[in-house]
Image (cartoon, rainbow, N blue to C red; front, side, top):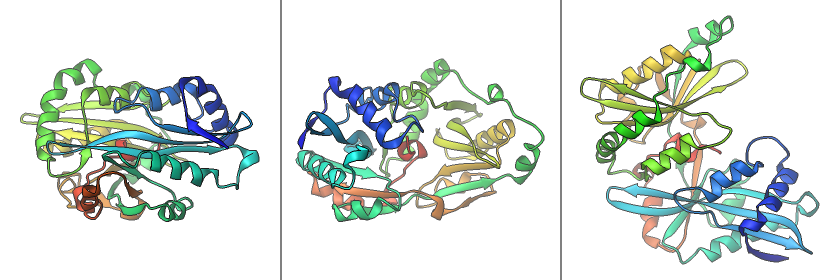
Length: 323
């Protein structure tokens, strides 16, 4: 096989291979989504490794660039995401070969790799040097009355609370400055306004909403999406920012629940229970429903301390959500 990095001229071939490998379900096979995810990412373009056999694209492996922050320090990272193998060439070890080569090509970088493999791919990653960081602490609020009620009534999406991006732009710097100070001890995504625009405003095919709750001494920014399940509606809080950890956070969530009327609300919290302390009473930790985060060291051995201390990480759903 001829293995090389992808160029912009390869994108149509890549999208076709994704369709052959994964079918038409989901967004990953769409060119518009690929460009958003791997070309327009404010953290940088994704390194994409391709495998050809006789000019036929038979495999690809992608690590998506990401950036975290712990206080004043920035941490460069990659997220192991898309992979595909041509149906006629499966079972030949192409996935493992491309993954190993891409890791080797990035080995000298001051960065690390993280991802959330499922139970089928987990053993393969562990054999290739990944380690388990932890299972994310998911909190779930259940609203049974809403589940029953929505069997007989429909809440229209146009009524969901949503602040304009103009309002978000105006309030962002002050909200984020306070939030960054409150969370400075944790490893969190390196949030900034270009990231928020890219992740939530510009993403194709998926609708996210952002709502700013103005309290007397606190502003709370809730980013969420509403996901329909067969028997209930989920309000998934993907990012939550606030100036103070006080009752205004609970008030903002309660207001969204009253307007959206979901059967279930989900949010990722920190390992220490800091955020959980201010969530509505009905929210309970259900850790087994969280995602298992894995970690692969690259060029900076000092990052191994972070991998050994899962309590230092504060993931949001927006960071590790499968997209």
